[in-house]
Length: 250
Image (cartoon, rainbow, N blue to C red):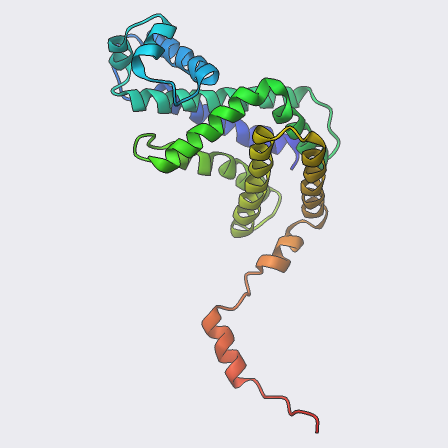
């Protein structure tokens, strides 16, 4: 994926993230205070996690009162979702700034650079918070409304649009993006729970191999697996019924 395409589509995501993170329903008179509360809550979650984010301890750590937190955000859940969105925005913003400074000559170099960035110990709080919030949202999606949907769509939209601009049909781009994001997140989840970097670095090289094949073969590689001329199951059954049967050799 050429870097300029990645940067262009990522810039669109970052702009949307800033708007959604700062427009949680709440009081409007003092937006600067609301932004400060949001930033402080994001820091709190990175340090303590979602499970410990009850309203009173959070307000105490932020130097304010529970009433003031709810003044800017209608509920604790709404504050948590907005703060999680702010963490995601920060993460993407930092990654893009780092990649702009990193010298790369190919798509595989880009994948390796992203992996090294996420695998840094400095990124551990972001990964722990992401997977914790993901698990809690699976148990209670209404409490963290919108989080699972954002997690499903944010990087997928980014990757899908970049692949479409490279010439992939929309359906193929969506399938490839889904696979690549799921595989990469699986490696990150393993990284959070294990310290076996050699094994994970080796697994990353398999991921890099897939990326290189897709880059070299282009849309043709996806067409071989997801060709639009694939018959529906009913059509395939009908074709088998009408096809002439081979006689067994005597």
